[in-house]
Image (cartoon, rainbow, N blue to C red; front, side):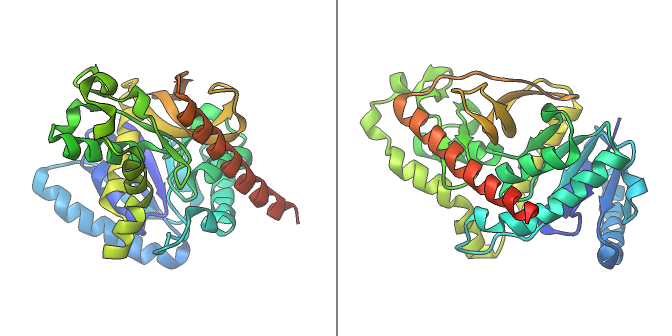
Length: 316
C-alpha cells in the first residue's frame, strides 16, 4: 500500500483527485496538503470525504496538513497548486506565476520526501515539469508531468464518436505540448487493431477539425462551466494508479528529453513512456509522418522558449 500527498488539495482538481484516490485499494494514506490559510477548508474536505467513504467501507486514512514534515515517506507527491486557466487564456500565460509555486514545492519535496515521485499537473505542465526537475534535482524519470494523457483520452472520445465505436477499441495518442502545439498521432492510430489507414478512406476524416476540437476542448469546457474538473482529475488519478500498481502501461506524459525522440533535447514534452512503481521505466521511441515530425519540433521550440523565459525571470 502507498502514501500519496496532494499539494493544492483544496482546488477543484486537487480535491477531486483526492476523493478518487481515497476510493482505490492502492492508497492507504492520503495527505491533503495546503497553505496555512486554507487548512480549515482542507480539514472540511477530509471530513466530507470520510462521510462518503463510510458508505462504501473504504479504509483509506486521510488528513489535512500544512506541515512539510507530513509529506515525508510519500510514494508520490502531486502538485496541482497554481493559478487556474481562465476562459480564453493560453496555458503559457500562467508560466511565471505558477513556476514560483512549483519551484518552491519541488524544493520542499526534495528535502522532506527525497525518495518520492513528483507528478506535475500545474499548467503550463510541460514547462512546470522542467521547473520541478531543476528545483528538486531528482532523476528525470521521477519527475512526471500530466502531459498529453488527457489529450489522448479526448482524442479517443472524438474518434469513438465519429465512428460510433466503443472507445476501448480506439488506440491512439497525442504527443508534444499540452497546449496549442499538441500533435495527434493519426498515422499511428488503430481501431480494433486495424491501422486507421486501412480502416477508412483518409478523406473521410477531417484531421484539421479533430485538431481544433482537441486544442479547444479545455477552453470550451471552461467557457461553459468555469473550469475543467472531471477529465483532468480522472487522468491524474489514472496516472497515479498506473504507477502504484506497477502495471507497466504505456501512457503519454511530459518528461524531460535528452534526444530520445527525433533528437529533441533540453525540453519537457508529452511522449509515450512505460510507467512503473519507480516512475518512468523508459521512453518509447516512435515514428511519425512528415507533418507530425514538423509539428513535434514546433512544439519543442515553443515550449523551450517559454521555459527559457521562466528561468531567465528567476535569474533577475
